[in-house]
Length: 162
Image (cartoon, helix red, strand yellow):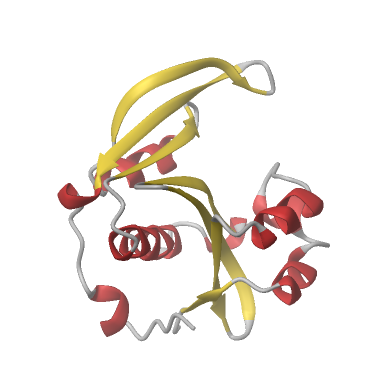
């Protein structure tokens, strides 16, 4: 099934707001996500299949650094490579923005996400204790943009960033 990656619009947020928590996990509120979409330093993308949103991701660009704010895939669409495709787009954007480093925080209990980031060359550089809900630790990871195993598979697979 073809996956289309496009820039997130406010109308996309309207489409997912009712199902944000149940389909996409314990996540930010719609208002926080709306503020992120409207922030000039942030860029958000959505992954769509059959016109329905199956995932989204966001970054914040700070001078020569890109911070991954989130990569979220609908629960029933996980393990289909959507997270990898979103991460690939983020890394492509980081390279286009001439970023030197990409950083992120991930819950230490989120092993699938940690493995995804490691597959793309991210390494642990720190730990924030009790960061999530004052209980779970956050692993801080980073990678140098020049070290990213980047490919042009995104274009060949029929993904179109609009």
